[in-house]
Image (cartoon, rainbow, N blue to C red; front, side, top):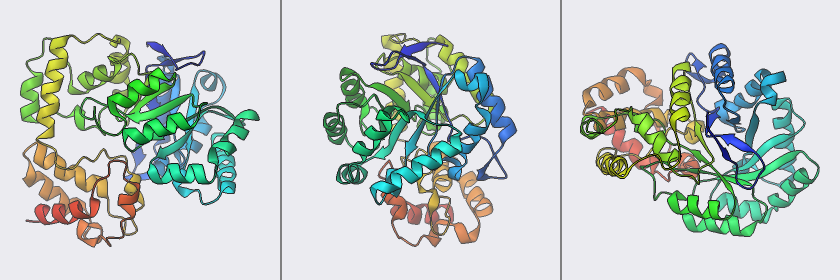
Length: 378
C-alpha cells in the first residue's frame, strides 16, 4: 500500500480508503448488512494497509456507523482513522447537531470522531450552515477534543466550492467527486487544484462513477483493447485518479472481497504521474465515447432512497443505462417487468420532487422516470 500526506496534517493516509456505503447486504435490504462478509472485507483491507474508513449518518439506512463501531475494536481500531458526516439537510436548528453527533458517537462506540464532515454541501445546505452558525458549533467540538479534524463533502459548482473554502480558514480536508469522466463536473479538476493549493487534503469519492466506469460496452472495449498495457477498465479509472498527486485518498465503496483484493493490488502499483501521454490520450478517447452512450448521469449514490412510494430509482436508472450502453434493451425490459414490482414501478412517482432536492448530480429524476417507464415497457 502506498501513502500520501493528508493535506497539512502530520499524518499519511493510505491512497485507498474504504467507503462503508455499499457493503454486502442480505436479501436486498440495504439496512441488513451481511456482517460476516463485510467484516472479512474490512479486516482484509486493514491488514493490507488501508487506514481510512468513510461512513455517514444515513449509510445503509443508519446501520453503517453501528456496524463499524461493533467490529473496529482493539488493534484494528488503532490502525485506522474513521470519517463520518453531519447530515446537514436534516438539521433544522443548531441543537439538532448535538443530537446527531451524540447518536453517532454512540453508534461508533467512540468518545470522539477522527474526521468529521459537513455532508454534501450545496447552495441550500451551505446557506443553512451559515445561518445556523454550524461551523461555530463544530469549532466547539474541536476545542473540546470531540472532533479531531473538520472537513466537508461537496455537491455543487466550482464557484460555491471556492466560497466555502474562503469562508472558513480551518478546514483540514474536503471530499469531492472526481473521475476521468467528471473532470469538469461540480468541483472537478479546478476544485482539486484549488483545495490542494490551500493546503487541504482531498478525498475523492465516485472514482468509478458508481461502478459505471468499471464496465466496458463494446465501443469502449475496442478502445481499451488498443492499450499498450492490458488493464481492466476499473484499474484504468483508479490509476487515472491516483495519477494526480493532489489526491490524498480515493474512496471505494466495495461490495465483495474480490473487489477489495483487486483494488488493493491496483493501489500497490499506483503512483502519481505514472501514466504516460499515450495512456492519457486513450483515456480521453474513452471519456468522449462514454459521453455518447450513457443517457442518465446517475452514480447510484442512493441519496434518493427515501422515496415516499419506495421507487428503486437508482436501480431502475441502472437498468436503463446499461440497456442503452450495452445495446441490451431487451434484457433491461425483461428485468424491469419481472424484477420491479408493479407498485414500485416508475409510473407510481408522485412527482413530489423530494428525490431531486437531494440528488448530487442534479438529475431531473421525474422527467427520466416517466421516459424510462415508457421505454422499458414498450
